[in-house]
Image: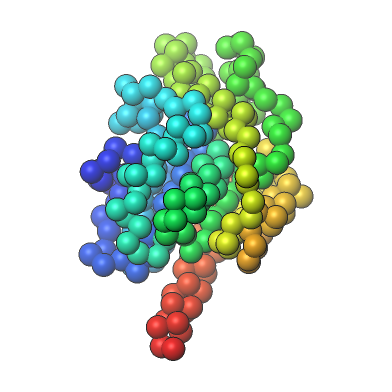
Length: 257
């Protein structure tokens, strides 16, 4: 992995002339390293770019971002130079909301749109969080945080580490649970939704409702596992490769005509 000119985007070694780019948005409390294995799972002509918000990993000393609007305003100018190839957005949990907000911001700015928006394990924006935790006292916040199984238990058990990570975690969950998008009409971008059968945070019935956020194609893929199914899923890489295959076919056919 290497940094782009912006600390917001980390990229793995990429082909000189990639056919596609994919931008990966992390879950609440997560960072770019959550996607470090993805270049091996995707076609070799796909450039993989992981979004790295402040407050974590190599940006640990920077203050975290608490508002979606602020995050999008700071992120988008850093992404624009990389929108020179057909690209996709993939976001998991909070990352799906950020990716969706980024699509709308690009649309409003008359910038290129992704070939598809891929949303994983995330309720659509019109579903409020049934058990919000961002405003809970520290003890209750950390107890509720454990239900997501996304934070290393070693961190939860060490007070000194928790003091370091708590501001970032609170910022992410505040962004997730308080974001109320305005003028959130359907995108003219296909949406592919992914979820797990045993995910108690994003149920299949809720994930189907992403269909209302696109005026074009929608698909839903359901895999075994829980909220962080993507860490071990063998089916998800296959589904992503199928999407790239279909895009490649479509672009070839369009070029031929």
